[in-house]
Image 1 (cartoon, rainbow, N blue to C red):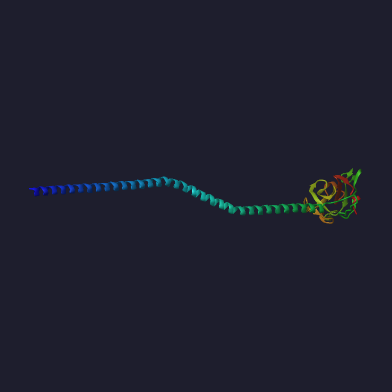
Image 2 (cartoon, rainbow, N blue to C red; image 1 turned 180 degrees about the vertical axis):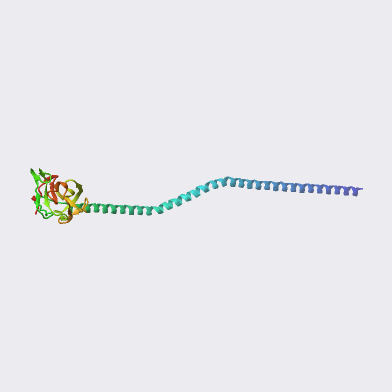
Length: 260
């Protein structure tokens, strides 16, 4: 009887120990599971925090990227401008030098023209002698202090020129160096050539034909300036002739005072 009680007691205690062991094991397992769960949760929170930081940081990087590209573009542009600057300065220097050369050339040309004009300036004086433009008798003398008789007109009048007899087609030569100022035709003297011979003096040649000169042409003493033509109606009785007149400051002067 006692042995049975002892066995029951032993079995009871074994069951108690077994139950306590199972409970302890379950508690250990539960604690381990809880620790693992907390660890997993902590890891997940860290991962979420890291992702959150990445999300927050990513827009900044995206925002900074265009700025970086723009900055790089500006740097490249600045580099190009810096590279162009020496070329621009060199080009500007070349252009300025070229303009200076052109200005000097223009100035030299102007000075040369002035020197040439001064060199070719016509001079004439009371003592200057001129050549006879044609060889022939004087049909009507210069007369501005009294009137003389004009046979064709059958009247007396003043005469501001020499009327020199000459056959039709006779060559007419320049009495002096000069510059042509006018070539025109009128009823009185026909085709008439006016020449500036310098110092306010001019010479007029009338009753001409085949005049090839024009205003501005330079002529030399002895040059052929035209030919004698048929006389106008104002000199039909006197016959073919050269009308030769001289003026000083637009006032008539006697050509005989200058003819050689």
